[in-house]
Length: 296
Ligand code: PDD
Picture (spheres, rainbow, N blue to C red):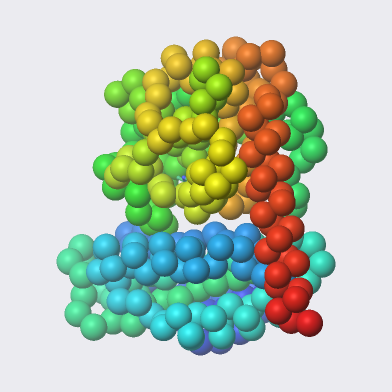
């Protein structure tokens, strides 16, 4: 098998389970030509899709928004995902799902009655580095030059990949995006900042993705009495904040240690981060235990 795919444990394309190197689509697929598709990234812990209902709901909502027909019922998705997850034992994995509008001669207008293309795979996921958790990661701030529907999880990601690349070239892990002076989100993360003991994250709007991890962190803070507000903050407020963290399905909750060239507070992940990180890990452990009980 090609080494490029060594961490991929299962692959699905349009009704077939195949080796990753055999997952092929037409060059006329609108996903390829226009980035005309929707996707999801779902963490897999102990062989279980984490927050699956929430991810599926977002996928369906996004498909409806851009008028791509839902290719599967929830029951069909469950069967498909169960089969893909069968080899995902031991370490953590993630599930990638992509649904494009399908194959048709190039025309901007949506074609009538074509079959969506469904592609999915499961891959091993490296745990977040201990150094990142202990010291925080470096980020840059950069103008958010994306479109005005960043709430849609679309495969049209050239802006995001370009922004993330700029972060990498400046020695940073993530690009935190700023629109009209306000922090929207990261190139592939949501952003939290702690100011005067209160955790803040931008409210949902078309300017940012309604992250599943973000929503879970908000839910956990609510449930455990952590003081928080869903209220936008400026780039300056973030740079001067006591703590800054980011969330995503592949990073969970990760602290920021440096923004541009300025160290955040004393440069160490703060007490609110520790608390929320622990709540997140406890929640994961409970889900694992519940899944085991279910199987046993
Ligand atoms: N990215 N904002 C953007 C622009 C994202 O691409 C992501 C996730 C998030 C966090 O959302 P969630 O908590 O649902 O993962 C926020 C995924 C992981 C990716 O593209 O790989």
